[in-house]
Image (cartoon, rainbow, N blue to C red):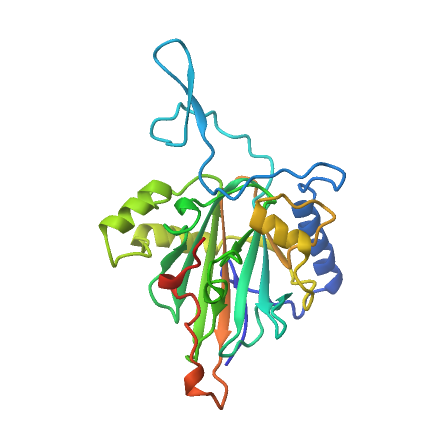
Length: 316
């Protein structure tokens, strides 16, 4: 079975192009992404683990007092942001080795039954993360935000990484995506936006939807929303190829992801980095394709829970 990784609809293929050109481009991509990390001498910011939208101040009718609210429907108008940099997404795929350690792996490798993987994501600007899963070209399901994770929030601060699934899950079986005994192609669509997607429920809206629609969660995007995401997936981006493969996850990465601490320039870089081509873009879409091939001989009594079993998302 053919193995490959697709980012924004473009296969990563480098044959026939000048190595020096790629080296210079990738150096520029990594430099542009990492330069917004604070210097090692600067104090790291602590964002905490809440993924809810930051509260904004609104004036009240009496006394001119200010009330904090996270509800955009009642918030005062916010001046448009001055966009000065391209959206960037850093992605590292970790796989659990025989010693239980998280080790960087190439997403284009061939996965087998029982393999455990986890994704560490880092952005260079504040924004909102959505993750959709499709299996063998089937209908997309939104697996993040999740009504049982982070209060259904999906807000990320720049350079404060998040791991999917979370290593803080209560049960070991919920800390990883695990490949089962069925071959297939899993696609994880990472959608990162400067502002929330208007028609996609998050936070209290997502929690209320799932409570009122038992059996219909995870939420499924409508045709219009999914068409926009697919269109953005075809937009031009700059990519820096995987690095650091085979290395274990660092203590700083683990602490940052589990405690909401910002990474600095001396910390390990993401394996893969993607940048939009233009500063005017308000969305970046990256599609990670994981190919699962069944070995010639498998033990029927070792069937796992499957990759991206949405009804078994990690709990905190």
